[in-house]
View 1 (cartoon, each protein chain N blue to C red):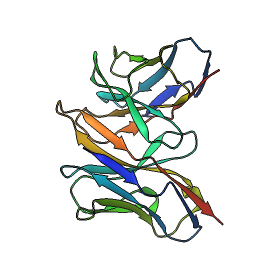
View 2: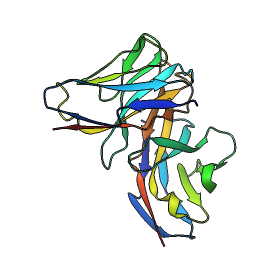
View 3: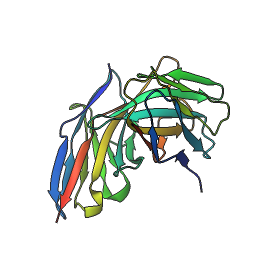
View 4: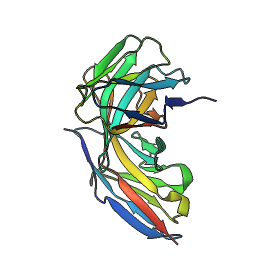
Length: 113
Length: 116
């Protein structure tokens, strides 16, 4: 059953802690993306990776970090430097970095207590 | 600069009546355009996409959208709303970056409410 999985679905964090969100895909896609969604706003791009061992900053990368050591995995770390981390985080993938259609995972809702 | 504007933040229709969700875009060349749907606390699901083939694009669940270059619009329609259509809908434009990357710009979303 192919698709994109994100875990956990809900995540709670204390202020000052780093937290890592998981994103895995078995679609054999080269490109992967992380977005942040806030109420009343569209999705904003945090980081993207067109190929293994390479990634680029998106529009709102400050306070976040990523790695792409394996094709199927693109974890996102929300660091304590992120001023307002409470949001819904969505991971997506596409066949390649130049292919237009992106497919989305179910999301992780992060709440900072 | 590329941008996308969804003209209504909320739309309410009665079950069985037509749905119209409006979207205008700004792009310096013919873009790829998408509509995605998001149910509460879920990821986004692709409804349909336009990539310079037929201007009337048919998608899943009876939705369709028409690309009108002269009006820079890509409105989403459905002839008859169903209760299960209640969700948030995003109009999205894709443009290519100088390095060939695939960057999407999202509208702010339209919340569709379907009433009995």
